[in-house]
Length: 114
Image 1 (tube, rainbow, N blue to C red):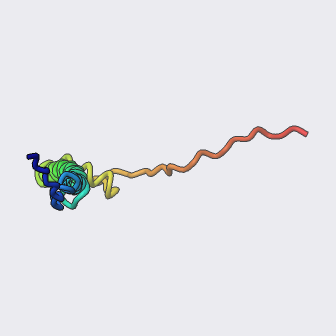
Image 2: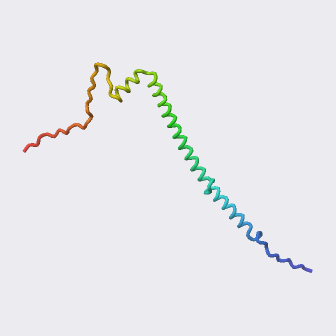
Image 3: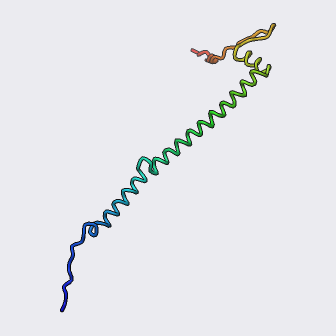
């Protein structure tokens, strides 16, 4: 006697399982790249952090320069005199300040001959 093999109808997961698994993996991959916390968002955030750190370094340098200038203004009489002379236009007793205007030079055209 020969027994007939039973032909069973495959279940939904047996029939579509690999395709569903592949689709799920593809969705996870897309989410990891383009999602709100994905690769591209993290790269954008890293670039922003680098820009902010560069700005912080620039501001710290400027703060150090300003602190040095404040210290010089408090302690260095020569620096104070320099500021008074150059920026404020002050002079010592007996000195005369002569200001020469810094305008464009007049054009010198040779006289035209008739």
